[in-house]
Amino acid sequence: MSREDYEIVIGLEVHSELSTKTKIFCSCPTEFGGEPNTHCCPVCMAMPGTLPVLNEKVVEYAIKAGLATNCEIADISKNDRKNYFYPDLPKAYQISQYDMPLCEHGYVEIEVDGEKKKIGLTRIHIEEDAGKLNHDDYGRGSLVDLNRAGVPLIEIVSEPDLRSSEEVDLYLKKLKSILEYIEVSDCKMQEGSLRADVNVSVRKKGQKEFGTRTEMKNMNSFRSIVRAIDYEAERQIEILEDGGKIDQETLRWDDVSGKTFPMRDKEDAQDYRYFPDPDLVTIRISEEMKENIRKSLPEMPESRKKRYIEEYNLPEYDSNILISSKYFSDLFEGATKVCNNPKAVSNWIMTDIIKELNEKELEPSDIPFTAEQLGNLVVLIDKGTISSSIAKKVLQEMFENPREPQKIIEEKGWVQISDEGAIKEVVLKVLEANPQSIADYKAGKDKALGFLVGQAMKETRGKANPQMLNKMFLEELKK
Amino acid sequence: MVVSREEILHIAKLADLNIKDEEIDEYAKNLQDILNFVDILNSVDTENVEESIGIANNTNVFRKDEIKEFGNRDILLQNAPEQEDGMFKIPKVI
Ligand SMILES: [Zn+2]
Image (cartoon, rainbow over all chains, first blue to last red):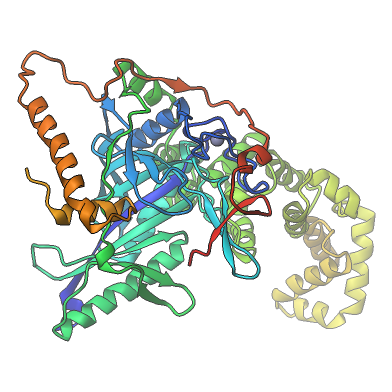
């Protein structure tokens, strides 16, 4: 048997931090960072006698996520306690949801090799995040910071429908994009606001039963998840090929060595003893509430794509890139409103902006300038105030120190030279310095013209109006 | 259902409790009493009673998503046996 005879089966539990202003059960801010234990109160610190009160936005956002992923929304739901000891969990239980989650039976659609595939969602439920353990400089103890404790999360549990690390990558990207579009999570990976527990098993192709699965917890980079799945599947297949057996266990992925390691021994098998939290009351979701939330859903990517193709005549390829992130899509629409040149805006996003993000290892949400500023940049090019090569430099500036492009070109003296006299002066100077090119051109080598224009651009440090240069060179060469 | 000694030990472990060997039978008896009581509850005829989740009758007790900062870390930390840099100091967790 070989690698090809096996099928990989992957299920994900994705935890996404909701972008509410306050925590799930108290009024402390959820804002990232801050001095340790300053976003805390007696409730999220689990002081005796305190009572949790559910944040209404958490319920609303979870239902929004459910509706955007084709889930059925529960009529009745409740909160349960998941009991375990860990120093980052001050109550010694996490308030979560057990058998009556807010949303169930949904799906997300991905496109694999040009074919649509539905990835089933078992459920989406709400729960609270834990705190953070730091270690002191001398390694003598651990320090507990509870700023994160009680930050609201949704857990999105997929069916074991994913069959390769590539599908997982597509699924995660799709999920992230949906959560961004409906504005319930900002999905900042570096801040851990999107993380996943990954379950992997393998089985021989054609086999009905699933193989024994292993779990990797708390992974917060798509790239690591893809690598970890590939490694883990390979490891399991090797064991089976050698006649061995897979142990059901929790593993830790080590990004440096590119390997997985067992985390805790099986004797410690978790038994969370879920039970309804008596401090919280039943959640009832009326049809009216569901309908109102449904109506509040923004336009989703597929509909935007259709509009881009039909209204703006953009190619499908371009449209797909634009809708791949809400931030691209919003940037595109905002800038187009200003400059009325959709194709130009789309090109800027697809080439220079994406390139810049990749080089700086930034995400679309990190784009520092506004859609209006990008629109104004395109206006400056369309009016002939700056050339597109200068515009590239302006865009760089907008990334470094975001401000109005008009202001940037004034400060830097980058306004395009469109004065005929000035252009002519440059043209004559370049011609005088390059007699060979003149001869080449006259001998029928059209390329020589390009060279001359290039020289003139160099001379003016990119500021000359290229159309005018072209025209004037032609005039002079014809003399 | 009969509560076994093994179950008592398992529950004690999950609850992080140290119980002495001679206490096991006592706890087993106590828990058995509770289970017996639940059995009585289970035998009650609830044919015409509406299903409920908790003991509270009210539903949808929500809070508005508005920040109220507590703003006093010293008070929150005042009973910590040990603290450092504004955090609870605990035995090292690996
Ligand atoms: Zn709090």
